[in-house]
Amino acid sequence: MSEETPWWREAVIYQVYPRSFNDTDDDGIGDIPGIVQKLDYFEELGVDALWLSPVYASPNVDNGYDVSDYRSIMDEFGTMEDWERLLDGLHERDMRLIMDMVLNHTSTEHEWFLEARESADSEYRDYYFWREDDGDDPPNDWESVWGGPAWTRDEESDEYYLHLFHERQADLDWTDPQVTDEIFDVVDWWLEKGVDGFRLDSVNLISKPDGLPETGPNEDPNGLGVVANGPRVGEHLRALCERVHAHDGVVTIGETPNLSVEEAKSYIGPGSDSLSMLLSFEHMEIDRGEGARWAMREWSLPELKDSIACWQTGLDRDEWQGLYFNNHDQPRAVSRFGDDEEYRRESAKALATLLFTLRGTPFIYQGEEIGMTNPRFERLDEIQDVATRRTLAHAVENGQVSGFDEVEDLINRRTRDNARTPMQWSADENAGFTEGEPWLKVNEDYPEVNVAAARDDADSVWHYYRRLIELRSEHPVFVHGDFELLLPDHPGLFAYLRTHEAERVLVVLELGGEASRFELPAFVEYDDFELLVANYEQSEEPGITDVPLRPYEARVYRLD
Ligand code: GLC
Image 1: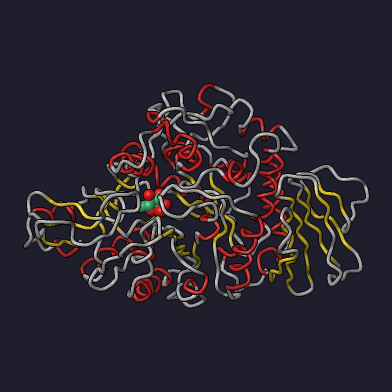
Image 2 (image 1 turned 180 degrees about the vertical axis):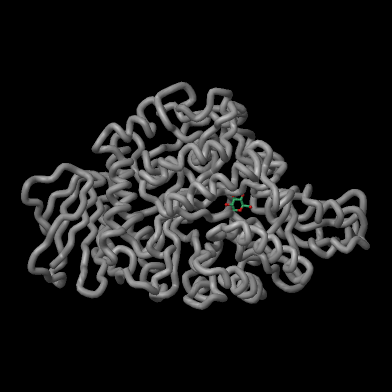
């Protein structure tokens, strides 16, 4: 492919959630040596880079997204030497390592916060947002993302500090130049160690609106509407990106909730002061209802197509996005957008086909490549996710629900633990993840859904992922091509064209879960076609129009 194309546009990135990936010391918690053990696995799958969820020292209120020391490794995960072995091992295999940087907030056990809390005169005080307690309510009406006020009163100083997430995740005040200096030092420190990029956690929350204005009554269940995309996000990001991109080939990936495609344009672009790409949330909000935090709603395929198409066509060629349907915060896509029972295999493959044939950089989340599904959580004590526990506790406190039993189904659909159950390596005890007691229960489907079984089965989801990764590297059209949606209103089919220079492909996906028929619109002209990939057995002469499609059937054609 062309010389100017940065590596990360053509890459496939694999996200590892270390706690749930592979345990080598039998404490029931995944670790870095466990990731090192699987280096050949990543290579065999064909991915180009790993994104490692946080491995820094942390009291683990939010599984590492509450960092207490940015320069050391969490004990449970191993040592800095283990981490170095991981980096070297990846580099030896021509793969790269992307670190997760949580810079919107620190743990309240970080030494900056401990110092800041000591006294109102501490030089660290202004690293965070403190407001006097005037005796009544918290300083403003902001809610934390998981419910309850975004302010907690510090007994010692009689002041409140701000936390958009948990009260043990205090928000950093980026307007203090000392804060940005510290952050730049941390980033430089990891660059020195040879990392290839950063995924920047919640990065469009780093600039709070001037004067911290009240939100007022609003429909935004996250409460982030007023706080996201604040006045100085652009300025802070430009400074950070300039710094990082001074190192050749280092990628910056912004995690950006509450962002429209129009707003996205100001953060990404070809310049060294822009993010390389961002991870938007719009398509992940499709089943979110209004009002209560957990509310869900029915969604329709035309809505999902519209959202995806809007980003595909709304961004310019140089404005890049990461593509994903799974990560450590989202329920498993096959359970959410597919059918995890009758058509688990087919729907996992159909969603994968979508992921790999859109413009952007595909992200695979561990276990997705074998079609892992949501487990069933029967009791609250089976759930660890701080977001779920918090949200439930607040709803109970406010008298909105009586307890777990009342919202069991909702919790099962929504909880982030759906994605965090241990990786299923084999049919051995605990899915081969640990010989100890796993920190979170293993999904009961592991005897059937596991890596060992998938490798042995030529028709598995795993082999299909490998095929798609290969296909994407063989055809520049998948990376660079323009996107054109066909049949926008069709309730069950997602069909589109991708065009790049002389190459054109047609993607047809049945996502409604029912047999259907595909008619190629008359304006799509072609002389000849070739079926590049499909997730069902095909007849010797597969057609391209007036084609009967089976539930979750996926076909990708090249048009000549
Ligand atoms: C991001 C992370 C999520 C975490 C939150 C706070 O959204 O992906 O896991 O809880 O930020 O750091």
